[in-house]
Length: 277
Image (cartoon, rainbow, N blue to C red):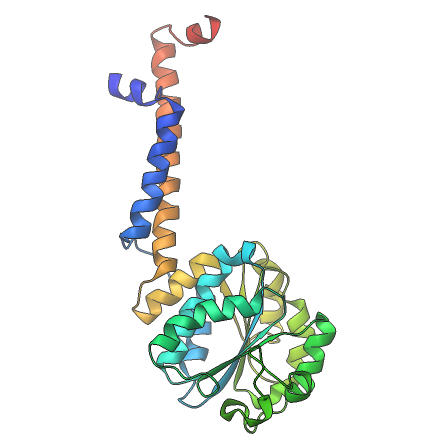
């Protein structure tokens, strides 16, 4: 009882130190806490896993760096999965941070042997929001005569035979906003659409799943961790979920200790005396 009372009175500064350790340790050495895979993640994984070598997929980056912690692990997992299957990836950007994000995420794969312009391409950011999305979906080479690096897109092997979004095998977007823009502009082309969304906006996209305008949905850091589990390749998302879970457990434990300490002191007639002083 005395130990519980003392734990409930720990100096808050030590709690901050402990919280930092509880978060950092799983990030460096993942614990591998169990995680259940949702139906959303299972369905999206099955769709993407059905792609064949040589198929071409669009990755549309529609988030800023401040939205990266919750949505970017999804993109990391999908790059790993699709590149391992020999799927080609065309990267476009709905927001202006996108081209730099793409360069960062593809760098490890370039070092591993993926060839720019053949296995993937970074077309860059096209200003204009939804209007720009509609324009390149209708004629990708007209909207993007050159890529992010200034290369002529008409001669790129990865874009041969591709003129509109309908020529792709799948469309994946990552966003910290609503899914409505992509549903409005891309669903008319009858290409399967998968959305990678931050956790707080995902519920708004569920009606599009029911209407079949979205073929799949991946939700936040947890969705990425579930995807890594299906790949049998734990990565940054799994480590992030471990850290998040351990932090939550620690906070819950000390909330319980604090309440237990209060009731122990009250039973001894000590509750409130410290405050009175």
